[in-house]
Image 1 (cartoon, rainbow, N blue to C red):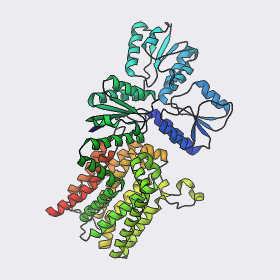
Image 2 (image 1 turned 90 degrees about the vertical axis):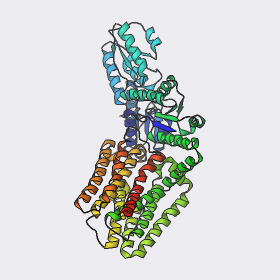
Image 3 (image 1 turned 180 degrees about the vertical axis):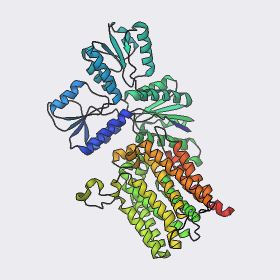
Image 4 (image 1 turned 120 degrees about the vertical axis):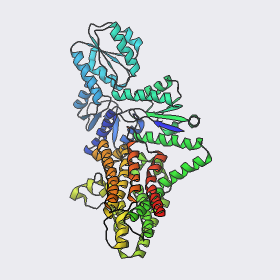
Length: 576
């Protein structure tokens, strides 16, 4: 089964902005905090906001206090006036595209133009637009209602921003033929048009399309209608529990798209659920392969093995010979730290990786024992190598454990910066530094008592690979991290800058290896090893669309680049 994901699936700009403003409000303002009407049409997001103390206000009281956030769809101007008169502080999270339409209607209605709004009269956006038109407003949902309107001496026509673009094309043609004096404004959001075009393209190339989004979301309903109109089976679901697995198993190709109010973590869950059907549709060996891949990823055993392979590569780059104990120590250290990091980061894992969160909830005791056992065994092996290896590893372990612990009294820097994890972007940098030390510096100092001319290049290679791998997954998890309050690097820099930084880091890793071999400071092994950051660079480049979903196989493939470093090193050792 092949799964094609629409690049336009997920939050549009207006929805993302509204959710961000609501989350910021929960951190900045004292309760109570409300949204006037549902902020967006997605029950999962609304439930999440309720957990953060942001509740829905359905009717404006005579008096009140607190903060009210105006929904992304906008509200009639009199609603905002009544909110302010009641005593609320108002935050306007109306989508800028909707604000533009409101401005057009307000100006033209004041000039005496009839304002024809094409859309769903019951939709909150249309209700808000009609509020700006006042008595000059007329709402029609289709061509039949439009043709029944009386002729106006002066009129404008606008569209609900999520309207079906083919319907509005018919409206424009009708206006040009019947009422050329009418002024038609193309107000359908570009994001909506792109989403609808891509849904139509998906329907032409796959056997079945899954549309993810709230059942009361107008733009999501239109996506499902477009697919159905194209003659393809369509499933409109809110969560993975609603999937018709029997229908999916019969499909060779599945398309996945989502409405503008659907968060990435919901799309990710659907992707994983559909991906699981791939194994069910295949033979027994394929089901077992996917199950083993999931197990190795969830337990961090595979990335720990990748760390061991990376340590082997860096040891050979530095010309070390007595390196096997340090490969074992590296694997145990990474396994321990990654498991403990997952156990202490369950809040964001519930959004970004729900399968892993569920696994750790079910096996909390066993995974804790594995983490502590791996860490203890690593320290024991280090102790047998001497005092220096033991104290180096102990220092790294303390650094890893202290990441989530309060280190500074709250009265010094405030509660926001008591922990290392509270420092924006610290996780990606500290993990890369820890890997660079344990895979490169630690073996070299322990064996030779110091560093050599190849150590710098080896550290750049190792830390650069890890930094880019983690940074890439942080980009995929931006929405979940934002909601969990985690200050990741992409949230600090922005998605585009973060992706550019990853490309620069990987390009630097390739350059350092090639230059090192050319200058004679690195063995020829540096050339084949340069393939690893180069392949990671290509993987990132090929997965930088609007919606990026790791999936089991994609995540496994990226982590396999660390294993590839070990295989290339072993092959080089055999050949030379």
